[in-house]
Length: 230
Image (cartoon, rainbow, N blue to C red; front, top):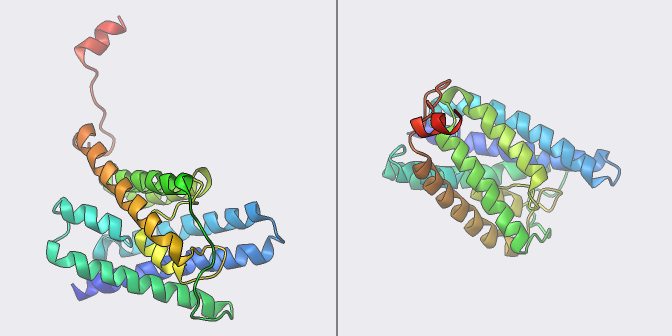
């Protein structure tokens, strides 16, 4: 268990360092072009997330996300006794990652974000982003989870109005950073509620879709489908 908690804390810390650090670097190099800064932030996050899942997955499952841990605990894939320690490790890791990013760039290590992110559109976006993330976790073939999670988050950076936090631990860590990737503390609770709602919706969708098929498997068409197409 200690190894698993260390993996969750370290993985979440590195993930937040990637997200916040690349946001700072992107903003500094973009010359005021927000699209370029977001693109740099996105590419770094995709690459970092893929590597971290591959690296820590065999140790802890590479959740790095309280919503994912909660869903897997509810489904029996994570022991109930491990849920609170997992979430605590993720939150501590998120804070450490934010502070590390600040230290690397010579910023004040301890700070609060003033970046207000609010409104129904952004809350819906967080629900959608988390819905997709959890659905990928539940249904993706094991060998493809890292690539599919990273790809989904990268896409959601651009198609959601919230730029896809999709992770209560990320909200917590980014709340502690008054940088490009930050979120004001007052905006954080609504984001977390939306993320948990999206995760719950993903569990329901997974049940309606039926069991996950093995990699490469295909569903045979039904007789009615064959009849409809001649």
